[in-house]
Length: 111
Image 1 (tube, rainbow, N blue to C red):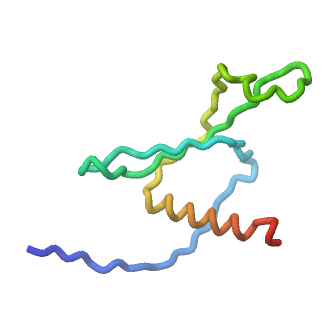
Image 2 (cartoon, rainbow, N blue to C red; image 1 turned 60 degrees about the horizontal axis):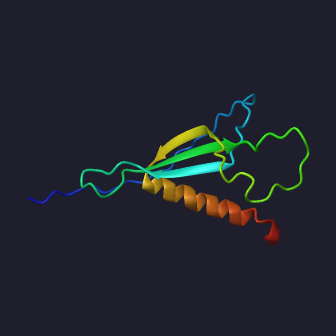
Image 3 (cartoon, rainbow, N blue to C red; image 1 turned 30 degrees about the horizontal axis):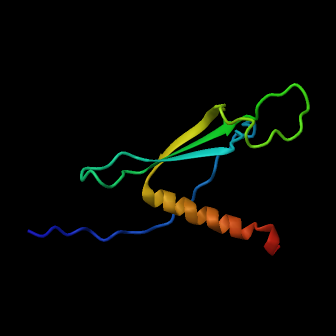
């Protein structure tokens, strides 16, 4: 018995972002990308975890010259998670395309 899928119907909707004018943006400077759990076949991940965080620079009470690459060799600096998302692969590809278009449109070297 053959199962037929109904045709996909595409349509547009209107949406409006509702932004809180008192909300302060979180500062992030780190990103962790992890594959989600596999689905039934045990091979394909179900989606992707995106974790955005912030790494504060080491605190120094005195002005110091550039410490050099070995200054923090044995130090683990904590990254504080700011937000975490789980997205499907298709949504991640859409975000990638959107970010690419934004970066191209705002590239200062082409202005």
